[in-house]
Image (cartoon, rainbow, N blue to C red):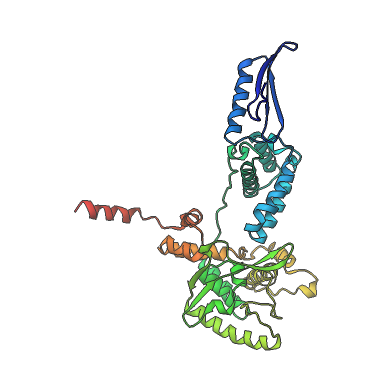
Length: 402
């Protein structure tokens, strides 16, 4: 009798155990079996295996665990194509999958993943974190399907965790005036003015070089961004998307401030020679850490504004207390006036909402912000677009009811 070829299989009845059995040899030489008292289920299984092998869609049995595969996927497939910060984010997100680390990926079901996300929610993780973990798992398992480690991707059958977007904050025009007036004599005043009048991100601001600033044509170019890596410290990377690489026009007031600042920068450069031309640097002409900038300039600026509003002079050295502790104590006073402290990114929100409220087309606002898609801008700032129902009615009447 001729030997059966791999992928052909056999079906028979086991008289001794009164079971129908099927057996098939995979292309890799592994033996697969199925037994049941129901002959149709065994035949269906055998036909399915034959079909998968014939279409080259068969997946060999494997004990490859989720942890091992995620680590391999991040290092082999993701790392070469992503930014350093994104890579570090993936390595951090792997730890959130710990309950499933030892489970073979071939045994993971949609229920396993949904329970993982539910448990994360109960532990207090945000929708954004759960969404990122889901996206990482889904992308890793898609590659596993391509590599024929999986027949199908269970993550495709799980809804992406919802992200509840918090209502954005903005500064009022009075608050912007206070920020500018109190920062007027600070060396970071031009940076603050640039942030307010362009809406560019802090990492983009700290990555700007003089070669990116055209003071003759009142323009700046966003070509790189400063980031802080857990492993490499301060690094410079290209902007996230092609739309983030952009040219932005700047007001004459900002140009004037930058021209004055550049003179002082050049004088300081003589004391600290170097080849780089970063516009905003430390006193020693080193790149500025975003965390240090926020702590030493941005947060303090808002504290001092509030002290000034109340004609209070804080003396942390004399009372051996931090500005934050002094402010907390002052806020207990009955008539104390508050300056609502906000994060630096609020300047970007203020820039965008101000333009939209003044009927600047959303496509232009999206381009200035460097968003990859106009839909992103619309999703974040649609509330700031003035309602034009009355104008719409007038236009329709004029067009059709003359």
